[in-house]
Image 1 (cartoon, rainbow, N blue to C red):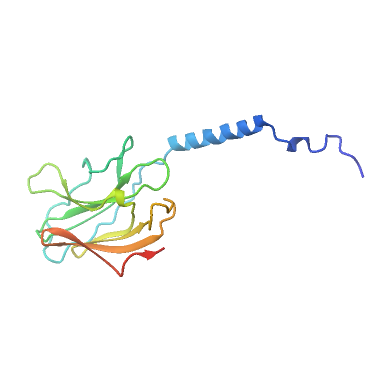
Image 2: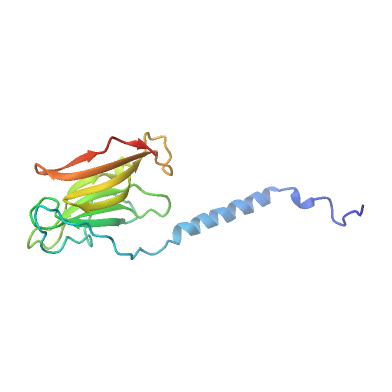
Length: 192
């Protein structure tokens, strides 16, 4: 058997400088990833159908320039999804927006707001909050159809459940009744 000309596996012994170099490189990658973000999505958002109670007239309220009641600290609020339809049967469409903070990492919780714009008003305004950020839900399968807002909410059974892994799924519907949005759900929250 021929002996190697190099010392026996000299490169397998780590020294503190190797750990420092690795830690510095990882910290640099993490810092760079928080600065480099993809651009805003430009895909068209699907629009919900109108309520059957009355044909909606006029344009739906725009989410552009609306100040949503969400505290995002140093980052901005982002409208992730939106849909429009006549929810209260007055003949004018409302816009429902799913909003979250533009966090550089992770999946921030969603809030759901209803916007309306009175005839002759310059700006739309938020008239209802259907889901609050503090509830820690992610909103999926979102739509406005037949005068109702429908969504699937992914949530957490306790504060101990990691943010990465929601363990509850709830299909919900909101409908305008007696001057407020009433929430109904299917058989209850189910484990994911």
